[in-house]
Length: 406
Image 1 (tube, one colour):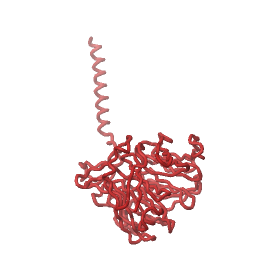
Image 2 (image 1 turned 90 degrees about the horizontal axis):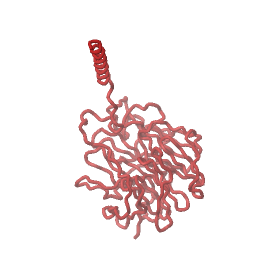
Image 3 (image 1 turned 90 degrees about the vertical axis):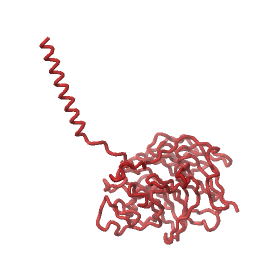
Image 4 (image 1 turned 30 degrees about the horizontal axis):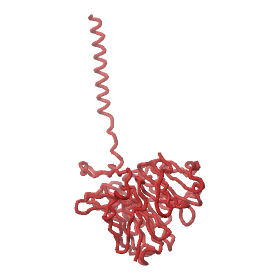
């Protein structure tokens, strides 16, 4: 029995030693990093309850959308054009009444079919990393964080297998702020933004916070601008053909700074990130001498943390003359602010060269100022051939049609 006791005692001692070492190791192990959205939060806000608000991501029918709450200028009308599209974001138009709608969290591209009277939708492609879509010459391009797929002749063959162009485009790999709005420009090239892989940081490599363009096959990559933290919407001015783009400011600098911005692209320009925000605000954490010197100035300040998203110039004839060539911008709405802002569609009225800009409300009612409640989050815009405007609502998973009648 003594021998057995000694053996068990030795096991007990070894176990105690192992547990003690394990405990010491656990104490010495570094803490898990905070979630990406908390990066840059100061110690003074450690108890803040501000956090991103998860989307609904379930089907909503048109009858359940409170259209009566939406406010528009006199003469304008809003209706639900398509429903049952959870997480609906950017809209691109194909052929034969087909529209393709990207999502973020769900990883889907929806195909919406319009027969002139009603719209139906189906999941066109699924299980991708934050996909969006662009259309050119009969081919649908599906762009995810880590993948580029081309569906050739999709209008005639809706089940066509994709051509994988991922290697040719060679996107940088880090995912934070790498959801993309992508579109083909008047020059026939694909324009692609690459957001910063952080809330605020020195960039790990130079390939982030950029605006690029490519040939449709992935060749001929050019860097057009740098210092753009997170652009998720852009369009070309109908007269000057210059690119105007939305840009998100960083979080955790208080309720009122920095502003999101509307930018006018100048090739080779730097827009400040990470050292300078909104053209004139040096960052207090990522410091640089004369941080805002030489930074290209924004066309307009779009509100602090407002989540400025889709950008479209009005080039139709249905709306009154004073709306011609005016920029519309969907602001999805703030989370990093104690008093909410955004949750609307605004206009940026400016000269063609970007001067004398004024931000004017257009489509409101998604948020109640009095109690800070909200029910919808406008995300992207699309101009129809008849001059009406489509507006996607990521929260409700529907697409509105805004029209005008005298």
